[in-house]
Length: 175
Image (tube, rainbow, N blue to C red; front, side, top):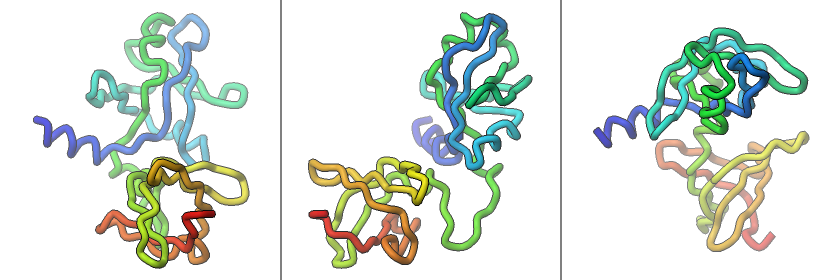
């Protein structure tokens, strides 16, 4: 069973997170990780990770609200029920994502890659990405430190090899 759940884990891509309840009728705030952010509204079934397992949940209604989104899920029609999902990740099966062009990657593909500089020195592992407006930034956890490396293809990021789980960058670890 452990192997199977690991396989399922790899096939799911996190696209958002449930936030605090909104109102008293089972609505919840939703944080979207999709680009554009409104893409999260196009999925009618969300998978929520509860007690270590993904559970399919039907989205009855979802809409923009203020600067974010709110949604109501089937069978969770009270504030108390939806409150149990606060901070739970929302995912979809990877097979539902659009196919990307060559040399384009989903953020989920980059998390966990080992980052090497052009001399082959290991700088660390990608633990996250940040949006800064001008370009995305890789968060790389190295030997006791955290590096912030701009994600600039061909200039800073010179190779991504998903098969070998590595990314090669032009970067001085002392920078």
